[in-house]
Image 1 (cartoon, protein in one colour):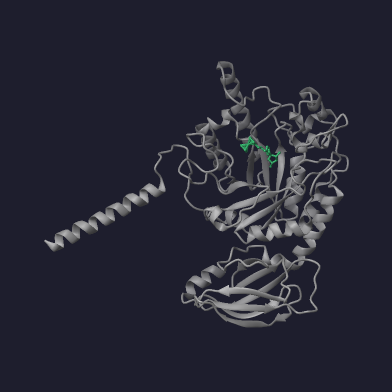
Image 2 (tube, protein in one colour):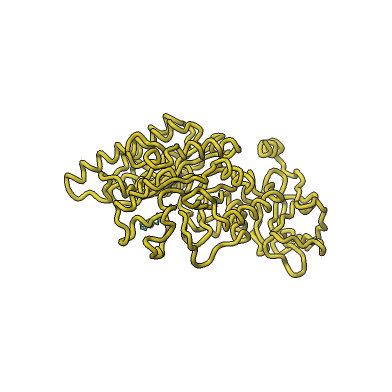
Amino acid sequence: MKKITLFLISLCICFSADIHAQGKRSSIPLKHGAHRIGKRTDPEMQRWREHGLGQFIHWGLYSIPGGFWKGQYYDYAAEQIRSWDLVPNEEYDNLCNEFNPTAFDARKWARQAKEMGARYLIFTTKHHDGFCMWPSKYTDFTIANSPYKKDIVKQVVDAYNREGIDVILYFSIMDWHHPDFRGSINNPEDSLANERFKQFTRNQLLELVTNYPTLKGLWFDGTWHAAWKQEAEFADNLEKELRILKPDLIIGSRFRPDDYGKRGTDSNGDLMGDYEQGWERDLPNSKEELYGNDWDCVMTIPENQWGYHSEWKGYVKTAYDLIEMLVKSVSMDGNFVLNFGPDSKGNIRPEETRIAGEIGKWMKTNNEAIYACTASELKPQGWGYFTQKENKLYLTVFNRPINNRVKFEVPKGTIKIRKAYLLADKREMDIIDGGRNKKDDLLYQIAIPKGFTPDQPFVIVIELEDNRNDKNQYQQALT
Ligand code: H79
């Protein structure tokens, strides 16, 4: 009797645990939800994950007005000036007849990006204004019909690839120029126009993936309008078509809506796409906000200017601010992508060039703490951020403690320290035993040499002993 009761009790426990697990996973049946739970594990995605630093470039017709229309200052993001009441659409679209960037030299941009340490580029092929920087067969509103004529996307892709930099193409679904674009569908005519527009979108995306076969991925924008949110099936089929053309294509989470018009994550909370694209001009504060997804942060130098604005107002981030964002991103398993907005002649503005130089100088000394690094399990401390690679921990110090000692805690029985040194000059540093806390974690302090006064944040490397029990697992982690 007892045995039967016990058996029934344990059956109940198992059964309810199962229900609970299912309830937690997915409760809403979706035809067009996430395709995969968890991260991609293929080499292309791993390569993307290891980039650490990227560059974004916003370039298009909007660089001609540069945030001014007939002398009036546009107080929003310069790349969106076409949507300003003061700007007649036709006049804006006629800028196509003026676009002639005589100073444009893709190799120069690519060399600068390489010097900065960028490992990938996101380039605007078509922003919301609808102007195509490549000679698309499916519209006349392209670079081919400007005085410049030549394919800009091709030059950019080739030049960056030559420098070993991967290229991801930005594409706005929303298109303010195309006569068939509809933000919402309100009558049968809208519906017909929307069908034509969907085919146009499909044609353009297949065209991009075919024309530029070395591209690594697509970065989608302008997918929040009501008409697109109803296109779960179309978007899902299109994504599948794109992946047939290029199976390892990397697509962010901002492309498809699910069956219920939910974007980014589907109605069950699972990420749609290969990485989280939501961190635009924003950074997470802790790993808990990331739900274990891949992600990158795209960031502007001024507050909110992506395209060229000739007069930046408000706070302009410094190289120090941006390096901190970069390290913070990598310390939480993300990439950091910094935006540049070249002017209408194709020049990168001096402020951006200076910042690229300062970041590049920092990266030259410290990129070991960035490329292919992951988050560390150690508890964050006020002086800066931990990153980690193989048997090395990197401590990037932004706030130098007044006593010149960098503190951290090692949970009991986890890692053993072999030595510590400055990444800048390999100088070995004293490790001071700081005792134990109440939980028996080991406390350490690393002494910063007094004479060491760099003008940029610096990195302390902590080499670890291989003290894990499972050697195989450790070897796998190294390879
Ligand atoms: O290209 C740059 C910007 O021009 C573009 N994205 C970056 C990379 C951009 N377009 N619009 N926006 C950024 C801001 C849009 C905000 C909103 Fe919304 C769209 C507000 C309402 C609709 C976000 C999405 C908040 C609600 C839905």
